Each structure stands twice: as structure tokens, then as C-alpha cells.
Figure 1 (spheres, rainbow, N blue to C red):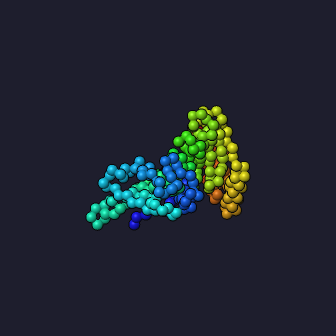
Figure 2: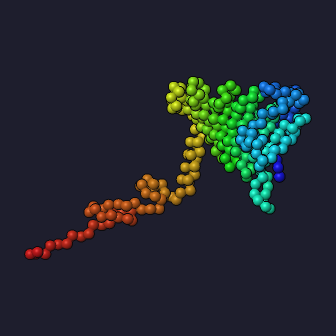
Length: 281
């Protein structure tokens, strides 16, 4: 069945937000991009296809494109590019690319590519409709893996890099003051909560200082102490004594007797009696 693949992952909200804005429609929506028009009757003949950069659907006989009109649009503003795969009874169409004109100015501003299993691979978006991409998303196994953002809307390259693990935000790199555009701030997250921040004040690529969330650190320490107390409460009565003696619970310590003999029952073995020498021997 043809259609847009379901969005997976925590933060591929860029395109979702843009599509929601498009549902408003009409002149009350975002401004038109350079070359575009808020009047559907004046839309440019070339809609600036973003899919063409990835799958070259215009020149490939193997690919088929279809267009539809989304919410609030009087003309088609969504294009999907399909490829037929398989042979004989197993032939079917798979979605390779989808692009959307979300502010209804006649120019595409969001594109997403897919693999032949229908899983998203990559997405790009122009959030401020200036004709330049400022958001890049990468997916792995259908889940968001990385989100790069140009918050300046001018460089044409990202200055914030967000990384995800199992769909949750794991770490962030930011370029805030270094002339080279290299990262100078690092954020580490645990369960979607900021745990610590590292900063590079000299722009040499190394963290000069780490600042931690004191409340989160205290909560982690309290949880560890609680877990340790619970483990001790469940331990056998002699476990504490065994631990104090440097042995595992239920295992007798190894001792050394006065003659160097080893004992394995908690006490040294008695020394063997010395044999008396016979006269003349």
C-alpha cells in the first residue's frame, strides 16, 4: 500500500511541526521562500524537487512519482517517489522518497528518503523557508540516530549535533564561540535528562571543565546506597563476618599454622610431632 511511512524515534518532530503549520493554509501561514508565492495561481513551474537530489526520479524509467494535495492546499504539494522491486508474483512498489511543500508557496522544503523495507534513512528541512536546508536527520533501523541543526539560519551548516540511543537523546555537541565552527560545548544526557556539561574555552578541541547536575548526582548516589543496603539485608547472617575476614559469604578463611601448614577449615592445622632420633643414628 502506497503512503508515507510511520515516523519513529523521539525527535523527528521537525517535519511533523512543519506539516502541522501547513495545515493552516492560506496567506496566514509562513512567508514564501525566495522564488515561491503564497498565491497558488502563481506557483513556479519548477517546485525545486529535493527528492531529485537523492533518487533522480526525473530521468529514471524505473521510478514512478505521484503527487497529492495535503491539508489546506488547493494544489498538489506532496510528492512520493516509488520503485518497483521483486519479480513475478512478488513484484511490489516501495517508497523511496517523500517531499512536501509545507508552507504552500510552491517550493518543496522537507524531504525524507527510505530504504526498500520502508524504514526512514535521511531527512532534510528548511525550517525558516529561506531556500536553505537547516535541519538534517539520520536514522538507523527506522529510529532517529542523529539530528544536526543550523540554529543561525545563515551558515548552511550545522552548529548543533544531537545524538540518540534507542530513540532517547544521549549527547549533544554545540558550536557557540569557536571561529572554526568546531564544537566547544558537550552535553551528556541520562534518561532524557541533562547529566553534565563540558566546555572548551580555548577552542583546542578538549574539555576544560565539566559541570554536573548536583541533584541528579545526589539521586544516583542515594539509589546506589539503597541498592547496597537492600543487598546486605538479603545476605546470610555470616556474610558480614566473612566479608570482614576478606572471604566470600559461606567460605571459611585460609589460615597458616606455626609450621607453615595451610588450614582450610577456619583454623590452622596442628603441627606434626617431631620424630626422636635413635641413639647411634
